[in-house]
Length: 236
Picture (cartoon, helix red, strand yellow):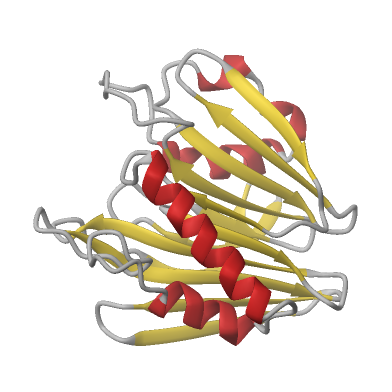
């Protein structure tokens, strides 16, 4: 939930790659598999504590949520529900009209990236606890997000610089190159590397990647704690 990159693919698909940073005291997530939410089949890793998720996909859409809005906020709980339920709530409704301010009152700050696969539309929803900012982004433009709750504006900008330097050397990266970037990109400080480690126990638990190519999906999941890798190939 803490760093996310979007890269349009040469086949007119896209590659979405995410690192999840969590405290070591929080139990690991369950690797992605198929679930039924309402009448919709989706694929996602499940948070083993709260039962929600931070990334999910099917043949229609892909969603990924990062903690925090534009800047780090002061927690003001208790909150009505976990941010990990937001994506599942969308699939229960399966209606983009779900993303309105009224649905997020009482939920902690977040940034949500919403991708419509066939239409090739990407949208960003930023909820700061009071207002919902909606931005429609350009499909053919690579992007990187880092969670404002863990990374200062300066660090987020340096990560973006590192990402675009990587793209300068690899203008049409393969999905494996993006996994390597998310795994090994070096900020010169273990607290802010893309695979990070901090004294308070916060560390990168896993890397998830959704690769839409044609009508098929590759959903890869790398458990960095137990060196475990799982890939789902989802056929339409």
